[in-house]
Length: 274
Picture 1: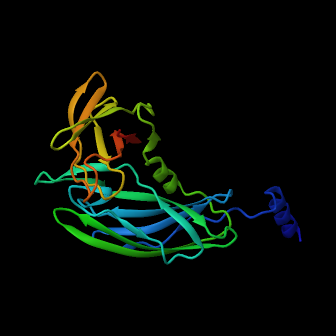
Picture 2 (picture 1 turned 180 degrees about the vertical axis):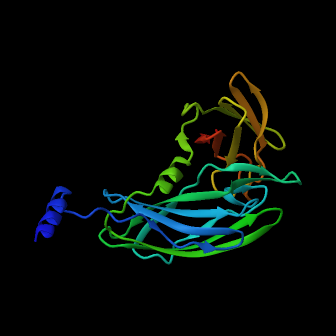
Picture 3 (picture 1 turned 90 degrees about the horizontal axis):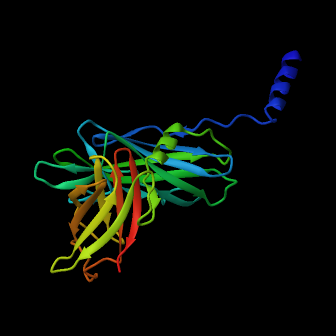
């Protein structure tokens, strides 16, 4: 009886509820030169976070949403999930790779976690995630890889997972054209018109560890990777041809999506083109 009374006192002091369950991690699924698993947690305010973690073997890489000159972006199929209204995959800051032939690609090596914002159809019921992931891994040659993963997320709160905190911090921050965020800014975008139009992008950022990636309005565009052409007084200029126009599309896109990377920081800017 004394032990029972003591237990009840502890529960009442904690607000009468049990502590949240541990964060969720699926079993690893091994594939071609990579291991994959699902992660999840569930805040008390009903927001659900998930993540798709890929650990690559040394020397191998996988790709960003726009892979560059070569490669295949990951494809996330959540259609087999239960009680899932939406799963929004977010893309961590990537890096540039240049192979022996000079081909340039964009992606990740080592390990990467793609954060996923989850919305339940019925917040009072668990969400059962079922993911079919198709991706490519490359060293000197590329090979296709796939994984099928499941993870059930209860409707009750789950302790936060530090791995997902770090994944969220790896995302580029949104910024407007000309806006300085954490010392980074895309200050100007201009088009040199000609037989093959060329985009010139001016950025403000210090240091040499600086890179820029450019995307069109949608994934039908296949723009070249920008090359740095000038650096002076804390600013740099990048240039790339407006090439890879989709069939029947305009010669110049309505906007560019620009990702500026400097060291461990990155911003994403939508730049409209008049």
